[in-house]
Image 1 (spheres, rainbow, N blue to C red):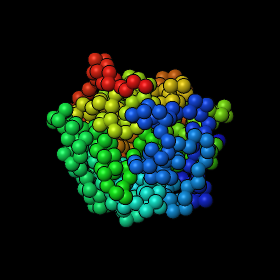
Image 2 (spheres, rainbow, N blue to C red):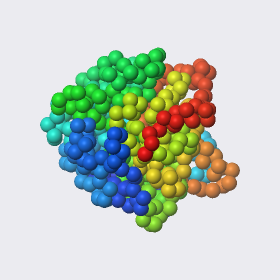
Image 3 (cartoon, rainbow, N blue to C red):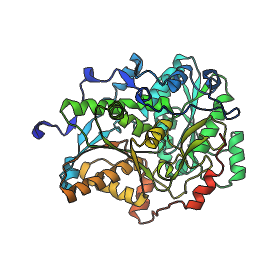
Image 4 (cartoon, helix red, strand yellow):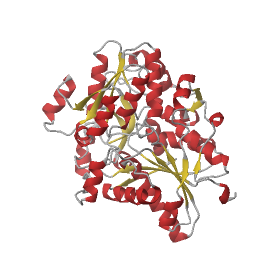
Length: 456
């Protein structure tokens, strides 16, 4: 391979774009455990999910067998507005670190939502419109998913109701206003607009909220309005399926220049970006065709993989959603209000959880001051202000590149740059002012949170 022939940015041609999503479950020997009815504790039948999810998305959620699923033409056409996204060689970062490692990042921030979330938002909005629905409800944490869904719903002329984690609602007013610009209504969660929100506020007055809280409210709102369904931006199998477009493009771009990565790194909150990025590489690993070191990076303040338990748990704080088997901190776990780095969900995707449990990937947790240090290092040399979530992956990519500097190994590192941080300036301000602190939950905190896990 002639290094001089590798461009700074690798783009696919339009005819090289993936026409199908990849479903990694088809190649998994141990499939993710089924969703359970919280009342009967038995696997959910498709008809039980119909009041919550769109019909076609239910089929995708439960499909463990088909390796490839066609991307509808309408979704392909929408993707062309901002895809393919570039795979970038981080030459300047390599020079800054003086490392022999070769570093690449897949940049998903080149759309108005500023993140990878649009890949699934447009798919879910499309299937809702196709079903003849009036609108959808959802939750959002940092705001990327809510922004992406509001864009997708605007495209299909559908109503979009967003419940935004209260701390993010207050810290990120501009992200909120982008959603409203695209026609969405945005409610800080927990709120007094739903019964579950009122109950959470009664039990936890003054709470800054969590994704689990917001999910509970969005699900209640969907089930109480005719012609509405709930859609989720992470965790679910269907979302990881849609996000496989990231990994498929990444692998196609690498293959185009004969590049084989040694290490693939992604940030991990609910698992959508990570699962999408690693899917085709994990597929090769599962089939015995290749091997890669795959690293999930999560915040030390919300460490579901590294300190959680692998068990059935509610997907939401209000305990109205199905039970999923995943690495979890307990559905009642609420991250510290000083946590500014996103990735605030109490559990991890069942797919990612099963792969991690089977030893096919590893996980690391990082503290937020170290995350923002890495973010600023990256921004100063690569010219992109990264999202705090993405910066978890940057932190470990830098750490691994510095290890290569010590050992002289010329490893090829690929990480996911999930989006931009231009709406996260309150967090950057706190870091720059020296006001940001690290919070790591104690063993007692986590023990109390998992004590409420349902008995299955």
